[in-house]
Image (tube, rainbow, N blue to C red; front, side):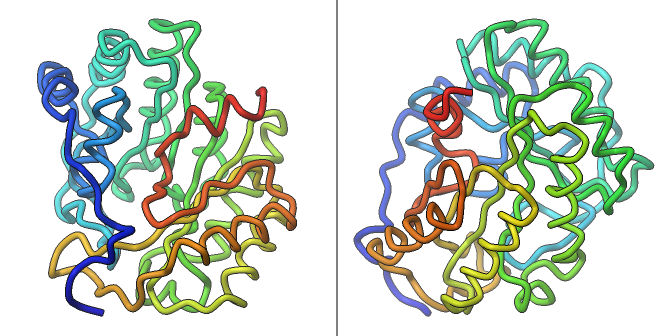
Amino acid sequence: MHGRLPEWIKTKASGLHETKTFLRNHGLSTVCEEARCPNKGHCFSKPTATFMILGNSCTRDCGFCSVKSGNPSFVDAEEPERVAEAAHEMGLRYVVITSVTRDDLYDGGALQFAMTVKAVKNRLPDARVEVLTPDFKGNVNSLKTVLDARPDVFNHNMETVKRLYGVVRPQADYERSLNVLRNAKKIAPDIKTKSGLMLGLGENIDEIIGLFKDLREAECDFLTVGQYLRPSKKNLPVVEYIRPEIFEELKKTALKVGFEFVASGPLVRSSMNAEDMYRRNNV
């Protein structure tokens, strides 16, 4: 689908400068910027940000994502402390940490995740930490490394329905991603798990509900559902803009399936209002 965005998709880009200054001062990247998130102005004005560790170059090339693919950078041993210091200076109570996919590393970057979680918790003992990880090629030891650092929420996004994986996530695998969430719950049953998906890529309602059920079978606790927006011309086109009332109906369905909390709407993104999702469940 081409043309103007529907009215319910439009956002205001305000409140960027101060948060971006914090990030640049510490030489840090955010997925908010690298993935061209439409909610960047909203979140940066709060302030909140999702820190992206392990560089800004990904070893995969997903059809929906604008993060550049190419030769990854070295692993910066000082990065965990810089993230912690930036989070402290920003006065964050809830810190989200994600990364590019690093298939070049023996552990997929799991140790860097763990070190960053520990650094943030040490610097901000009252803050909560959520990680949004890649699939680590299904390596359970890497998953355990991250969970042993005791994040408060473990997030791994499914992104889309099983049928569309070959187009949307050609280097990923639907069952492998489900197993990441399933194994996370087995390793650390007390840590809340979370996943997210995008709509508008050509999926149908039955496939969406099937994904909901698969996630609940994997004991996933929290869910985010948002509209896919094409970040650049090299990315997959939007097949359909889903109306807000459909997102609301899907939220009701997901809650009936058994999720503890569901955020569903055109502009919902995996990390948006993550703190609200966590705290509303009295975790």
